[in-house]
Length: 216
Length: 216
Image 1 (tube, each protein chain N blue to C red):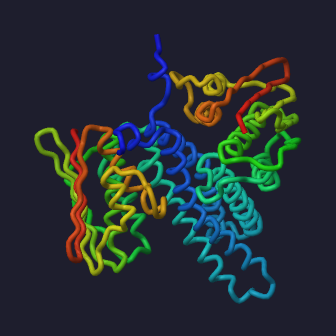
Image 2 (cartoon, rainbow over the protein chains, first blue to last red):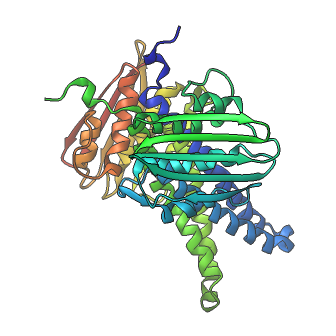
Image 3 (tube, each protein chain N blue to C red):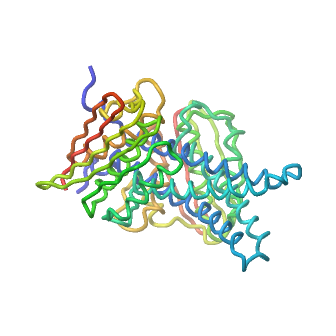
């Protein structure tokens, strides 16, 4: 039997999972930059110079995009209190760059408070992550009667939620499987429910939907 | 009057502070890499090419060192359960690279469990941060009667603790000042006290000491 208290993750654990995820995300482009530099310094690989510079440039862009995304999606840039949809769109688009799925951004709401902005970015990325075979992640945001509804529709071949992601979206702690596949969906659930909202998802053939409702 | 419950930071807040700090730490070398690439692509700055490549190389090293440090200091690399002193030393040394203070690593204990390793790295970096005018950060670790004592001695001109750091080391929430100056010291306090230990500090002329005691 699991009590409510046990089910909610305590402060330090949540923080270590999240920072672990960030380090994992960031080390890949940072390592690629180092590999590019190694190539450039390798006298036997001088014909790869241009390729190496390209790798460094692409990885540097990717890294800066990841950090900028993370500041709002996890760290919620402590200085800004509100975020415009126009400022959030490029952050959401940046994590789709190089991915097989494309983002269809249908956000009508023009301004978001911090938790809502955080939820929107995580929902967008998780919708894209449900599309390993490519497809379209349609993200909508609508206000009605003081409530904000955020919706992510993943449409594409083999659209699916990994078991760890489904557990996280249901607010369940990870008992087995990979923490890296779980933490972001759990973080979305925490962000939404900590602010008085609800989170749901459906999985159908070639389609996954995520729906978050939050008070404005 | 502050109750115990109010004083302890909840999970999501702690996580956003920490990830915010990480993003802040990482964006500086990532931005320097991008600046280096801009210089290389600027036709009017071709005489700066070598300098630009040097900037990219140094920043890439710094970034990888920061991420490697953060994985253990915050994220506590979820796969490893124990850390050898030999594995922790280069991580601690890496954050002193380019700093005015130097690290004197006097660690006798050979192996650390996760929270102890996390405490040691944060204590080492915070000891160095107390030395804006340079000096020596001596870090010792000793086991006795089932307890581990970690000690950081900052000796140097103008050794001091910023008010935010002192607040964090005392386990107090930030009420004013810069979160970036506070979060790591609060995190050290949390790491130590969450695992049944105690944390103390003293500030004297040209000397700051941090002492953590944790059960093994």
